[in-house]
Image 1 (tube, rainbow, N blue to C red):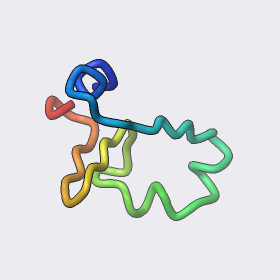
Image 2 (image 1 turned 90 degrees about the vertical axis):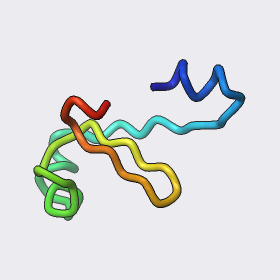
Image 3 (image 1 turned 90 degrees about the horizontal axis):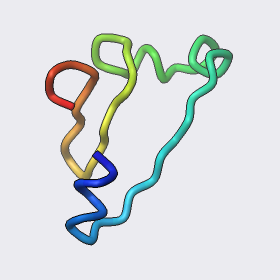
Length: 52
């Protein structure tokens, strides 16, 4: 995904989530299917599946 964004001149930010943060944070509850990776862009969220 980063290469596609960079190729189009778009900026992007990678966020690394530690296992401890994943288990203690509400991130898991708010993630579709309770999984990462997840791509968020404006009004679009793509969760781990064949979509990424």
